[in-house]
Image (cartoon, rainbow, N blue to C red; front, top):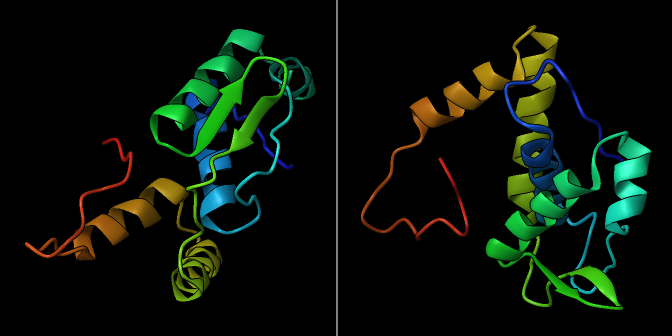
Length: 130
């Protein structure tokens, strides 16, 4: 699993771990039942405190994307599903174009938010946080 922590990012390391694992689940790189690295192992790999990884895992549990059991570790929830293929493909295309044009991630997110037109038919966000 490839996760990176940027010290200059606007998010805490726990939020970065949470968001990146959530992205791996959403894009189908992690599937229901897959085991996540132990808190200690991931903390060591990323050179961050174990409590930081534990917080990220709790956020994933709050989102319904992970389940933890003493003795068996943390796994992707059986109910976690990747986004439809077209969504992931469109996101990849947006990322490639934004990078090619020198747009930062935060700016690409602002563009997406600006064109997003919520309607009464939009489903409630799944574990989404502002």
